[in-house]
Image (cartoon, rainbow, N blue to C red):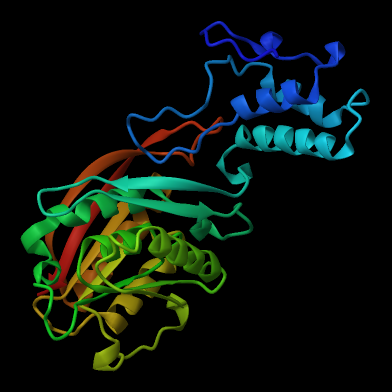
Length: 336
């Protein structure tokens, strides 16, 4: 069976060529080797499964898809080959073309918390459902929360108290931040997003809690919340939260106003222990939204207790499953 040579000069010419009528087993084994592993922003992880030169590979995959594979008798096996070739081509066509799949994210251990591994399902991106992707800011925020220490007093409360602190995530997407909070701290977490995002969010919550029920400390729930429809007045006290978290939630000029209105609605009013933690990528196109958000938060009566900048690598901006460095701003807000 001809497989990809593990050398830096391996090329598409080293793959089983269709004119030689390779067996179905050879083609399937090759297509498995060509699978690009989704990145989870682990610096030790390298995307891809071989050192094959990618030049000419899209044409090779397209030729398999277009071929009748007449020398292969089993129609079911033919379908498997075509589907595998289509998946490998999609993986090399930019992030928006990647088919549904799962990625595992590891929140490193700290002096106060143990490492947590969270596997998330990401459907194919359709229309404007950007919440079906796990964004870099979510991973950075999930890793940062344990290190904020005294800036988040509600996370330091002892277990066994009459009621656990309540946390809400706005625009939870695939759920990474909320799931990390529930696994790391003795709190009750409510994850929210638009109705179209909620089914996958709920799937990830159910799967993660089932896979890691022994490590989950707090309870977790899921619900739909459209910021454009939040009440313009405070919710009842029992519906307010000690901590509000959000990662990469600004994608339109309307979002800063809607997000701040949602924060005003759900954050415990004038509670000196209440906090808002946000992480935003500093994309040039959305800097007006970032500044608008800051102005509106200050106008609401909140101030920044601590803030900072950090860099990471996202997989959205470049094709070929490439990763691009992104600068993110994070901040902890409290009532003035």
